Length: 302
Ligand code: HEM
Ligand code: HEM
Image 1 (cartoon, rainbow, N blue to C red):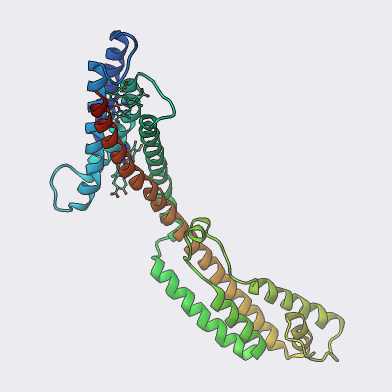
Image 2 (image 1 turned 180 degrees about the vertical axis):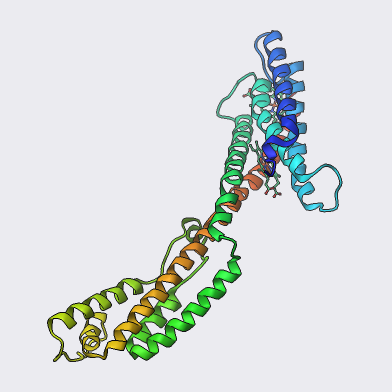
């Protein structure tokens, strides 16, 4: 099986991160500054500097991702190191500040560290969970092949509806025009299905037609209203092959709906795979700005 980025090279970066953290925690426990541990002691400066350098390096991942010709390690190796060393940053930050938090801008910096790490954790979860689901849902078809199949089903459905009745044709056409894939971010994330209940309507129609045939085989008239229920009367009196065509139409539309649902799910999975980066990246830039401000301000007041 394809090796996950988490298990890259026998968990090499997990070890690097664990050793870095163990040494930092031991130093923190051993160090006994007066009056209490804080960012201004020699250990505080050391841990703060390590955390800041790590942040600069973690941000460089965005550059490495875009330098396709770079030979500086594989992307998977970078990602593995990014995740494990990224997780060390909040712990180093807390040790650096001596766990001093308050309602100030230094603590905002700390909060940004946690926010970036949490969004990153969501990303890792999404990268592990969704790719297999995407493959299974696509069932070896591509999205464009599924879209083509939908177009073909739509065309056949219209042809068939036209043969049944102009009103059914109009109903099917309206439903086809209302089928929307993609759309707003919320719509993509929730895989919302806005297609009209045309299938329900046609099924009802077919059912009522069958009932009417059983109870009152003749004598119904087409009423003026354009509602589906009004058409039932008309279809009940229509020749038998109309009923057959109707059932064929229902089958076509049902197939289309299941394809639409699969594409909506595909769009949803893809959206979840990407949405967290819209938090992770801007938050990491905010973190960089806050870090710069923090370093400048502590030197300014020094
Ligand atoms: C990820 C990086 C960093 C984080 C999250 C961070 C966070 C913090 C926090 C929360 C405090 C406590 C503020 C308070 O007393 O309320 C602090 C103090 C301090 N930090 Fe940082 N810091 C980072 C990096 C740095 C760096 C790179 C330096 C300097 C080179 C630095 C220098 C200081 C100093 C001197 C203090 C003590 C300020 C004082 O006690 O008045 N920090 N830091
Ligand atoms: C303070 C720490 C962190 C910073 C500053 C940071 C910053 C970044 C940046 C700039 C990127 C590049 C995104 C892009 O350009 O497309 C990135 C990607 C990524 N980060 Fe972080 N990150 C941090 C911590 C973490 C942590 C702790 C995790 C996971 C536990 C994580 C998970 C990821 C993942 C999975 C990607 C890859 C996105 C992709 O290749 O599509 N990050 N991060």
